[in-house]
Length: 308
Ligand SMILES: Nc1ncnc2c1ncn2[C@@H]1O[C@H](COP(=O)(O)OP(=O)(O)OP(=O)(O)O)[C@@H](O)[C@H]1O
Image (cartoon, rainbow, N blue to C red; front, top):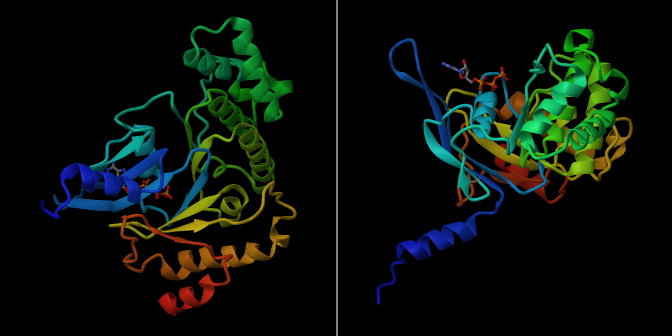
């Protein structure tokens, strides 16, 4: 009998080497035509995954391709190479199983706060009664503190309130995965803090799987279980997957008291300032980015050995 594994054995061993079961991004690449007629590779060899219920943030410099990855996860863009598999099915287009919140709110301007949410809830569960749809929608709007503004149109809401409606709508439809593209990017720091707290509250109540783009290291530390670090483009890659081992519930005004907070924060800032331009070479044998835990003391010498 030959020692060479057959296809079934090979795919079984590949399957076993993969860690994530809910969603897997495999060898994703995106190229756009460049003005000189050649193709420009925005990112390539992108491999990562999510476990169900994880909150994952992605950080990287402007233009490395974060939104393009998020849009591909949403099914709004096609990758040039690679595939994304969620619950064993390849993502080929948009679906109600994946909800998206963009920076610019995307509300329907002619509908009230309540109807912007009921509209989506009705589409998700067409068999529900009017009363069911309304009660469900109001529950989520209450979670983001909008019970007093149900009848107002988007033009009568502040930027922060509009973003709360978008967040309530996205969570209310209970998609398998929520994709948040810098949802607080346009908000002032105070409003941003309040809505971050509301996002934590709504996530702790629902434990939905969330993938979020942010440029704000402190925001990522407050929200994420894991942070993906993306190297600079073109030819960007996911360089590392950083564990955020800070206990929950996390509060903005006390999180920094944890002794690991600054360890992880410094590690992230060091990546963005000093290391994001370095070529990414350290992939694990299964193709996933190296997983690091900056709060682990034992990791520090190893980190020094690698990065000097
Ligand atoms: N349709 C397109 N045609 C050509 N180039 C594009 C297109 N869409 C995006 N790009 C380029 O792809 C790169 C990645 O864009 P993307 O918006 O995904 O980056 P990003 O990391 O989300 O940036 P930011 O943090 O500034 O939002 C950019 O250089 C952008 O100019």
